[in-house]
Structures are given as C-alpha cells and as structure tokens.
Amino acid sequence: MPQEERRFKKYLTDRNISMVIRWWAAGAVYFFIGWGTFLGSQRSTIDLMFTLGLVLGLFNVLILNPFLRLMFNLGPKRPPQENTFMQRMSDHLVELIKNIFIVFIVFLIYITINRSLVGLLHLPEDSVPLPGEPVMFGLFYLIVYLVLEAAARKAKQSINALLHQNQK
Image (cartoon, rainbow, N blue to C red):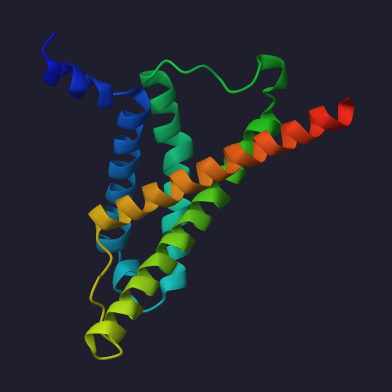
C-alpha cells in the first residue's frame, strides 16, 4: 500500500466520517430553516434559535443518530432490560435540550464575532459582517458539539472516579 494511501486512510475513521456527516446535517438544517422559512428573515433571533435547535434535535433523534448507529454498526448504549420506554423518552428530551443549548452557544459565537468585527473595523452598529450561513453554522455547531461531548466524558470519568474512591 503506498504511503499516501495509508496517510489518507488514517483520517478516514468512523468518528471522522460521522463528524463530517454531523457538520453537513447541521448546515443542511440551517439552510432549510434559516434560509428557507420566514424565521430566517425576521428580527427575532429567539424564534430562529429555538426552532433551529428543536428541528436539529428532532433530526438527530429521528434520523441522524439511528443512521450513524446503523452505518457504523454501533450497538445500543445500554442493555435491553434497561432500555425502557421512559428511558428512551428521557434520552430524546435530553437530546432536544442539548441541541437547543448548542444552537444557543452557536448564536452567542456569531454575536461575539459580529460585535468584535463591528468594533475593530469601525462599521455601523447595525451591520452584520458575518451573517449566518450553512457552512460556518455547521462548523460552529460541530465545534460546540465536540466540546460538550468532551466535557460530558470528563464529567463521567470524574464521577466514576469519585464513586470508586468512596466505595473503598
């Protein structure tokens, strides 16, 4: 196998492919909601933020997460006896809230970048130098998603370490 091909295959891991799919999905949902509905052209960012987070959450729960589990042959997260209807509903609710929170943070990133550019470039106060668009939205969404995923993994490790320490 040539060196270039091995280098290329090193980056084609299941995780990297799933992250590209998540980036594309977030950008596509933004494209359809932000540019394709009346919410994108209104002044109310709260309506757009809530709707976008809700649609992204539903898209992840109903389409993207099952697709990625089947595509990469990932099994269920918990044993079948613990996978009750109420547990699945609470998982779906947490996924919806998580996506609304991620979109909220992405909107804060856009606001921070735009206000900084307005101040640095001495632009009019009501100008928007970096408007919302699918590619950057997907990138910001993916960055926030990965940071929250890493924070949740660290928190679980810390809690497990504390529990094991208290049991001794």
